[in-house]
Length: 296
Image (cartoon, rainbow, N blue to C red):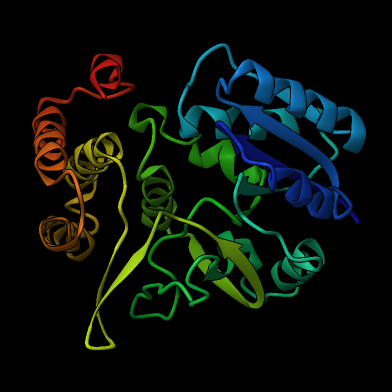
């Protein structure tokens, strides 16, 4: 266990496997806070039971405040206690290995460039397909962006780089923060010795005569809305500093539209919601779209 590290988990309608994830993580960190974004009453009862069983703090939001706000709550809780130097952030479905904290802490503190590292991440394995999730490197061999789950961050970073962008609600919160710290000359590095099982979507591999053609993520129409809207917002904010990355977001959108057309269900609804996302991104309509959620 490292008393220097506080774990932060954001939950929203968690499944039964969360208990096992918490059990593995709790023994590795000095503190643990779980921020729940308004799960059901029965799910919250289970979370309260887990909090007593594993001695962690449970913060129960009265409504779904989004991933950015929940992460900020968790980090602020850790910072307020004054005994932690690092936070380790996780989604509810990430399977944390038994050596996570020890290996990540060692990799960070023994790195000769540690004063310049804002985010350290593990290597990610798709827990459903059992394949390594691809990452992108810049010309210096550092990661371009980092996913939230598994991020190992010095708490001091937040005092001068700010908090996660809550207006994005969900989708792109981690990428925006990555661009922000990199724009201020910080690094994002990967600890390849640590493997984190992660389930970023509901992937399906499409094949023909036994050959893999492409993989679809099968996100909901509402998630597609936030993704497209937030991509517009990120492009508008970071176009000057990261033109290549922002241009790549156009290709990412085009790729997603194509995959939906070829291999996903509810195409018409998803395309409609994505169009609304682009419109709202251009108009600067950010935050949670409760009106659209009620229709979904």
